[in-house]
Length: 219
Image (cartoon, rainbow, N blue to C red; front, side, top):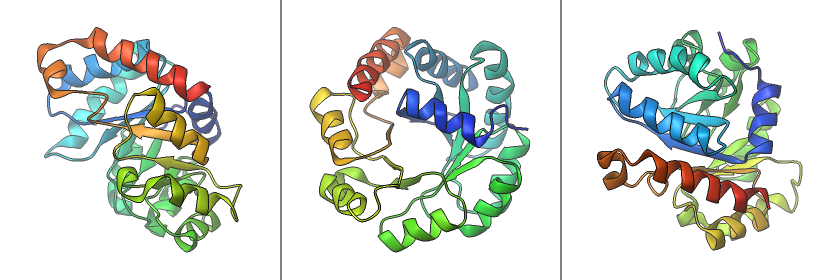
């Protein structure tokens, strides 16, 4: 069962509006990355459902995070169908993210009071997601659609909460332009976790980058 309900998760993201996105088949690598982000101020972390037996890795991380990162909302990403969402909710996912919008996933999440963030690109998709109870929606890939899309969406639908992912970098200029466009939060993956830093076990680098990026986001 999720440790935090949808209202608590949304509050955590609003207070620290950067959601790291990460996958690795090695549980210990994942623990180190999550802990580094947590110490850097992150309070919502998305583990992606990308590899074989990813749910087994997530199950271990979920139990570990409950004690080692007690204020962290650990969510699952890359979810495209309701059965997968249900599996991860059983393993303790605190929120669900998908690359597309599937209303059946919303039904499963709403029943458990867990927030669902589907991938949407048009006002109609975002509107439909909002109608079935999605608290925020994801625009991906950010570096392709650009800030003008966000500005255009927010003008007639200012109540919308949008997370942009893809091409978001932990740099002042990059983050400032997204928040100026009106995003609710940003999702960040490879640019926050350079392969060489992860391979070298340079967890302090990740902690420092999270602190730096969050300082820009909060401004």
